[in-house]
Length: 253
Length: 253
Image 1 (cartoon, rainbow over the protein chains, first blue to last red):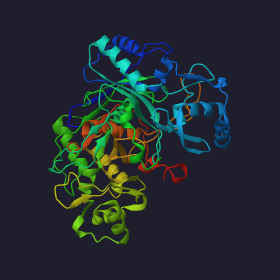
Image 2 (image 1 turned 60 degrees about the vertical axis):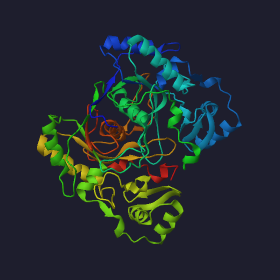
Image 3 (image 1 turned 135 degrees about the horizontal axis):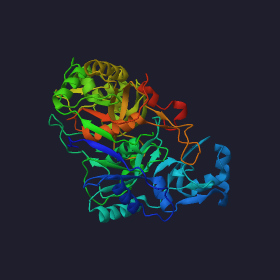
Image 4 (image 1 turned 90 degrees about the horizontal axis):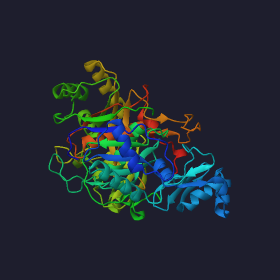
């Protein structure tokens, strides 16, 4: 990263409550006009998973679930609602760790996270949970295309979610969907100040941008969209799967 | 986080090459004057570990090492320099994972990271490596006190380093030392938009701020200090150990 200009995170305040069928790209573009925040080429638009899931109807009714044998066993052992565990399992390829209170899975998308991203907070209807979008890269791409059309600007788009992690306390916001830019910056082969090759291989620009956005978005869901301006990124057609460490390079599955 | 103002990351460009004995707080304060960047109350000053280690003389000469039995065995198995492995082991409590090319340890400070943070890049003298500062919280505190004295401003200070992590590709910048603020934001008990208690417990504000800073600092070491402005933080005397997940809550040690 050779940028020396500032990086700014600008919250997109004032968005309405998102409901199924909403066109997030249009709503964001309209709100930016209201807010007097003009998009610029090179902006990265970070959209919280929760509103993407709501707009796409990625929700499940808890009372409609019929937990199977695995969900019943896990729920008993972990002290969780078996119907919610069933929703988590439906969103998962594999259980990574399960101990009382904690259910870490590999989602159908390949993300390793708690409860497959299934979330009860910030939903207006009791008894509903949101699930991760079916294809967050596709969600990001659609928003990017609408924003390009409405603003004439070439922006990158991220769909983000807050994940916990091993070893360190506190969740951080990470990218689960990307469009228009390379989420990784590869430093292999670049030269340090003393003419030696850098050994740190890659930096997750997308996750760092997601974390930057959260500093203005807040966890409680009141500001689900932020613009991160001034980041040096490489354009291209990449998917967030690029941020998933392959099993053979991951010592902690 | 209820902030709706912008967050900005401002690179502190133009710092000299840091050498042992340098007073980083004074150098940063002087450079900010040169750059016309006045500190403000509430700013968070992020300082890369590498320059803290250089200023504090936290370096080791590779040729001076006499590797012991464990270092020789690990070096052989992992394909690494036994003298560097010895430096890593001297900085560690425990080896967490060791496979060819990868040595993950728990450092004497309690951080779990590759090679105990021992690093050969961006050092002017061949044959030297930097180690993590002995006490990065203390390093941050000293810088904070100097900046308060020189600028009259109440700022928080972070010492940061780039760590790799399980499950996800790409390193991200995290906090290894803090002074003046709470690195975690506890959301337990806060209420979402629909009057339900938030279940996500805590957000690592410090790690998100470190990641924000890296977007202007760059990995290659050219800009080792950045100011992150506009973040809503709680003042207090905390240590970065607060960001380390206790072993009994960590499923991946």
